[in-house]
Structures are given as C-alpha cells and as structure tokens.
Amino acid sequence: MSFNNLDTLYRQVIMDHYKNPRNKGTLADDTITIDMNNPTCGDRIELHLQIENDIVKDAKFEGEGCSISMSSASMMTQAIKGKNVDDAVKMSSIFSNMMLGEELDEVEMDLGDIEALQGVSKFPARIKCATLAWKAMEKAVAEDEKQ
Amino acid sequence: MNVEAIREQFPILNQEVNGHPLVYLDSAATSQKPIKVIEALNSYYHLDNSNVHRGVHTLGTRATDQYEGARDKVKQFIHAASTEEIIFTRGTTTAINMVGYGYARHFLKEGDEVVITQMEHHSNIIPWQQACKYTGATLKYIPMESDGTITLDAVRETITSNTKIVAITHVSNVLGTINPIREIADIAHENGAILLVDGAQGIPHLKVDVQALDCDFYAFSGHKMCGPTGIGVLYGKKALLEKMEPVEFGGEMIDFVDLYDSTWKELPWKFEGGTPIIAGAIGLGAAIDFLNEIGMEEIEAHEKQLVSYAQEKLSTIDGITIYGPKQRSGLVTFNIEGVHPHDTATVLDAEGIAVRAGHHCAQPLMKWLQATATARASFYLYNTNDDIDRLVEGIQRAKEYFGDVF
Image (tube, rainbow over all chains, first blue to last red):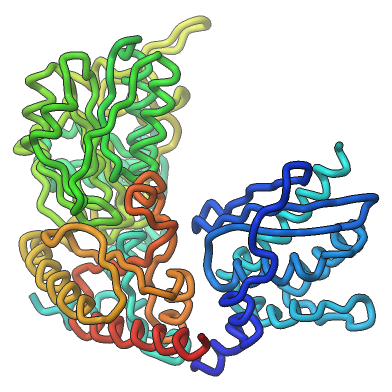
C-alpha cells in the first residue's frame, strides 16, 4: 500500500472535520446525553441531542479519539441536524452499509461530507472508529422514544 | 546470537505486507511461531492424536507421554520443584482467575487486603476486584514513581499484616518496567501474605526461576513465548495448590464419583477438568525446546540491545513522548504530538510495520499516564536494528503525512 492508498482513508474533507470539528461542545440539561466508548481502543464520545417533535433540533459532541472517529462524529452531527429522527436512523443504516463496502444509492439520501468516509471500508480495523458516533446517535434516539 | 538464522525459522516473517517487507513489532500481543512449534502441532495431529490418561491403546500412550512430557519441560524451564506444581490452563487470564476463584474466594474475609499496582493488565486487576467484592476484602494499590516504577519503600508501606494476597506483574506490558519480584516476595512473606506474579510479559524475555523468585504463584501464556494460543500455565507452590479448590468440575479431574459427592485426583490433575489442551501443551513444550536451544540469557541480551537502540533512535524524533523507565524490557510505548496512535498505527501498517495502538488492556495505567491511548512497538528474538530503523522512518512519514494535511 502506498501513501495514495492512505489518501483513500484520510481524505481532505475528513482532515478538515478532524482539525475543525463542527458541533463540538455540550447542550443544556433537557437534552439526551449518551456516553459511548470503543472498549477495544479507548475512543470515547459524549453525544448531546435535542429532539423536539421527532426532529433533531440540535446536536453536539465531546470526546477523544483518532481522526476517523472524531471527524465522523463531526460529520454525523452536521448531517442529522434538522432531520426527522427516522431519517437520522435510516442514514445510520446507510452509513453502516457503506462501511461494509456497499455502493451508495445517491438518490436515496444526500449524505454530503459523509461520503468522504467511504474509504474506511477498505480498512477493516478502522470501521469501528467511524461507526462509534452513529451508534451513539441510534442509542440517543432509542432513549428519546422511551421517554 | 545469529538473528538471520533465527528469522529463517519463522516463515511468517518472510512476506510483504502492503507492498513492503513485514516488520513485526507486536510480540507483546502475541509472538510469532517457529517451524519447530508448527511442526510439533502438525506431527501430533498427523500421527499421535488421542485422548490422554485413559486409552489403553498405543496412540493414547503416545499422547499422554507427550502431554506429560511437556509438563516436565515447563517444570525444568521455570525450575519448579515438581511437575505437581505445573497446571496447564488456557492462558494467563485463566490462570489468575483460577487463583481468584479457587483460592482468594475461599480464604479471603472482611478486613483482609489484596495489594496490586496500577501498572497491571486488566487480567491482574479484575479477578481481584471481583474476589474483593465477593469476600468483603479491600483492594489496595502500591503507588508508582513518576517513571512508572515502584520502590520497595512503597511496597513496604502498602503491604500490612492484613494483606493476604499480593499480585503484581513481572514486566509491565505498557511501560516495560521489570519489577523486583524476589524483594516483593520477601516483604509479602514477612507480612504473612502470598505473592502471585503475572508472568505473561516476563517469561518470554527473562530467565525465570520460580524457586529463586520465591513467588507462590506464577501465571503465564504460551503464545507470547513462541508457543501456540490457547495454552498457558499456572505454577503454584504445592502446599498452596493442595489447599486451593478446583474451579472446573467434570471428567479427568476426579478420583471417585458417587451419587451425591466426589473426590478429586491428586495434583496437578485436580485442576485440569475435561479433555486438556493436549496439542497446545505439546506445542508449548516445543517452544520451550526452541527457546532453550537459543538460550534465555542470549535472548535477554539481544532484546536489551534492541530496546536501548530503539530508545536512542525514537528519542530523536521531534514531538515524541516515550512512556516508562529507562531500564526496561523489550518494548517502547509512545505517542506522537498531533497524531492519534490509531492513525500512527494505520500509517505504519501502510508501510508494512505492525504495532499495537490503544489502551493495551491497562485502562487504570492509561489514566495514570493521562493518555487515552498510546502506540507500542514490542520486540522479540527475531527483531533487528533494521526493524527499528524502519519504525523510525515510518513514524517520520506519519508525522509528515499528518503535518501536510494540517
């Protein structure tokens, strides 16, 4: 593998999200907070979601981890803001399939920056880094539905 | 020591990974296996496979002889007083848990203390947390110095007459710290406590004499010392093993079975319920033969040279933090400023270099180091200074790569 192959993993847009994470921070108390970690590597995310009438009004995250996990969290929060929770969960399953190497169906949903993470599917050891934030989001939505 | 000749005995090392010759620097996770070990497993399954201790037939005798022969090799390798003191287990984790269940839960009571350190692997922390929760005993930690070592003064201050069990790693899997086992054993014994040593990172790299160390238990894994996975050893002093309860009940380990009660076989078999790990033990025996042919002193000297070369070379890299003491076993744990260790490991992998990144099953130690994760390069008898040069180049490229994108 050359550095060109590394470029399929570390795309410019990923590095931009890693360096300048969007939606970094916390939200007020009346929001849902989910702590999730990847026990095999120590990556950690604290995700805050404000959900009103099934719409994700706001999303913020704190955490520690590698470029892939942190950029994925940044992109995920950006992508789900303003979306219906069902669409957010649907997006998460599209993302999971993308990690399994499935081709994206462009028409189905516009994933924006997230498509940059497609290259992660070629690095099986790093897939869990990319999916951490999405798993946290799915858990937060499930919590919201319970309440 | 002729490293080139040794490398030829490890076929796995002779391959390209991602277009580069493989540099394997993850032996602390698991070591590679020499032809001799692979062939021992092969030959057992090709020619001698049978269950042990029960067949009257010839294959049964061959399998039993080889299995018990491996126990004798382990006994000699660690200089135990008798083969009764050598219990085959699945690995270090199982061995420590056997003591946690079979000894600690039976003999600890409220007010007793178990003493460990913050540099332990999870497998030498959680069994004691659980035993303490179960019995009401208290878990205590020997404080560490800033370089990741412990002093005998700290050991003396932590161990009291209430301490019943001291459990400590021989060599830290993150820092490479080599602990003064004999001195700690003496302090434990003066206070009426027993000492268990986690030898997973010790025995592959150092000559171990359990009688000279005077430890009460010594637990280790085969797969980190050129043997197969799924085999390990619990060494215990005979008097303690006699007091200790079996944790697995069933076939192989019984003497007489009645409708409502049963009695156990003598040592060591009372701890080996079920069909044992026959091929694994035979493979471990072959690994011991292999290590003996080279000589543990030779291996130790080779690794000492490697690790000091690695420390010297790595310390020239701008922005690197190296964790742990100067005097250490054959591994270097580090972080590069501005590059997460997973990213470092991915860039190194693209260059054919295998290192470990993460918390190394030592979360309390990571907390102490104030790092969420680190990268670790660990060495063994088949590594060379060239491997370390490749590592240094790889780290430089990781820095360039992440420097460029920022």
